[in-house]
Image (cartoon, rainbow, N blue to C red):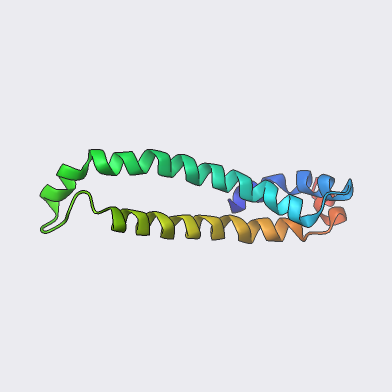
Length: 104
């Protein structure tokens, strides 16, 4: 996300120079992260259930369909993913439009 935000800093600078709020710039970055997280989880959760028997065979005493643990792991990964998007997004949203445009 940091790389993407660095690449999009001139675009964000133009948006800020034309009157966009820092919150709108932050949402621009966060929205991409939310979409990536949703797509990743929509593929990973069914894969977890599909590979459940294999996981059960590899780990002693592991239940293949422990929904509570799957939801907990998904929640932790979602929080970490959003934090990974918010920090660079906040940095880009608070940059001066002049400094962002000077990069080009």
